[in-house]
Length: 239
Picture 1 (cartoon, rainbow, N blue to C red):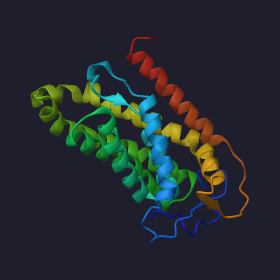
Picture 2 (spheres, rainbow, N blue to C red):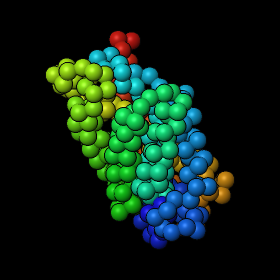
Picture 3 (tube, rainbow, N blue to C red):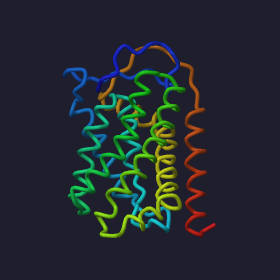
């Protein structure tokens, strides 16, 4: 699933031509030379941007690595997103410290968002498919994180399950909706530049089929990100 093969001429997420992976491996095995620069990009973004969103759950921090990982899932398939999520989760613990629980929660959240979005986009390779994939990823990740935080957070912090239950709706729910909403919007905004950079590096190739240029997904992505950033500023009491 790592390579997007046999793309037809329907409207796709990017107005640029559809992307083919250069991997010569089996179809479901990601090419290390393709995902390595994306892993590096994801980790750099993760180290540069890392901050709490909701004061009620200040132990939960926003990070933007899923933007790159979901773009990789769109390009190379959901298995590539799984591999990248595992690599980034381990690197994050190595650089910031943490436990196996941090790796577990990090991987569950990233895979639920990126792999779901990539799988739906792979099946429905259109702008509509991308939007449905991202929206479904946000919803399923939010539901999953409510469940897993209820299970894991009492163990991780040594607090009562009742205390965690009290955080779910006012804190953990909006945190995940905002975080993954921003990452979904940013992925729409950054998809074309990332594809362009990979193409320039000869890490992807395209079918030579012209597509109508359109910036509607870029505008939509920017609108989503700006709106949710304003919401964060409201939660922080800045505006």
